Image (cartoon, rainbow, N blue to C red; front, side):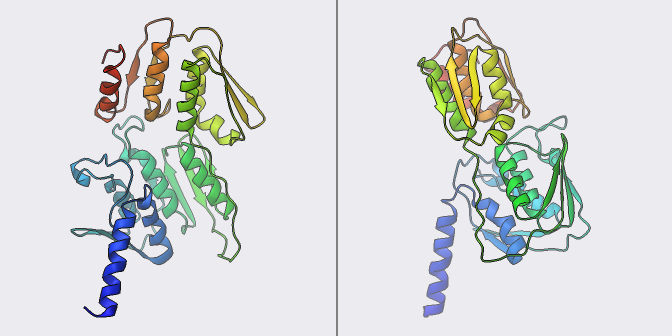
Length: 299
């Protein structure tokens, strides 16, 4: 084996191995497609929750589908997926409901990834409309960054309108602060409330968190929890007994990842209550079965 072939083989092996260790490596694909005109995808880290379409690996078929909706080319080989840039000058909009488990509203695990992929692919388009977008923390962060580099983005209840050009590249660094993980906020808030401990989160991104955690905060307030903002600090305090509350989980209410924490809080409530799961139940069934081993819940 000559040196060039040997180097190429080692480089390919490292790319394949390292790519499978990165939780968000799939989102590099649309970025590389725009920047270089091509990408090669070998897999992703994170939860391998895909169905048979994705060979039970981390879902990528919806990312590929969005890329194809932009008229770019996708080809599938035995160990990789290859993307090539296509002529998408006549593509002006994409409806995220096409990636939802329900035609009535946004549901399922694909709508977030589809929204983020569409945002990435809209970077080099003069105007693009994303209908029925999934609007949570990671999407708002991406929007804030795109605005920082020159894109004009308008958000309404049912669309994101991207227009204008990004600023020319330069050697200057751009400083950008990502919003803190809202699931960690819910995790530690639940732990504090169960243990009758007051908790303060320091120096949060209040603008984004108060918006994306609003359904969770509204429910916690209704359960009798004291929640107060002091500048960018968030204070969580238990006052009296937690009130049991019936909760309906939809894409516009609490995040599906937060369901188990509200189950735990509800068990400390003064009355019986229930949680209605609109997301296909198989996505959360294993979590509830584990909880049921230790606590008195009915599924």
